[in-house]
Length: 126
Image (tube, rainbow, N blue to C red):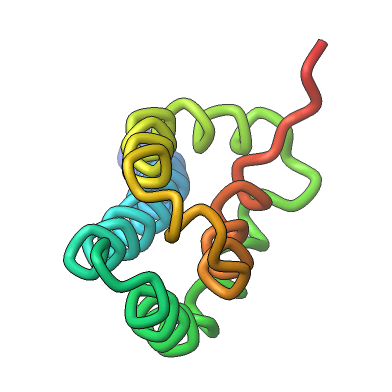
């Protein structure tokens, strides 16, 4: 009986650990997607059209992963707040890149591609 209880408790602990890791993994994956996106922008900051092309190609290549990971944040304000906090330094980096290159800021295709991260991390402000 004690062994059965110990196994059950162990299984429950494993389940909770896996669940929490999966959630953190989703946040980390979005962080990595955005970081890679901004690296592409930075690499092509002198050519807004090329930056837009490359970012759009990258976003298209990860679209199915973004769709899947976005489910983690739909209707889950707590997870979305955690994501927003994790992405804050990247949003600051994005703002610096755009501020230093008006052509990047004015490129509509680039802005449309970048907005996906804002949508994923959108939270209602009190």
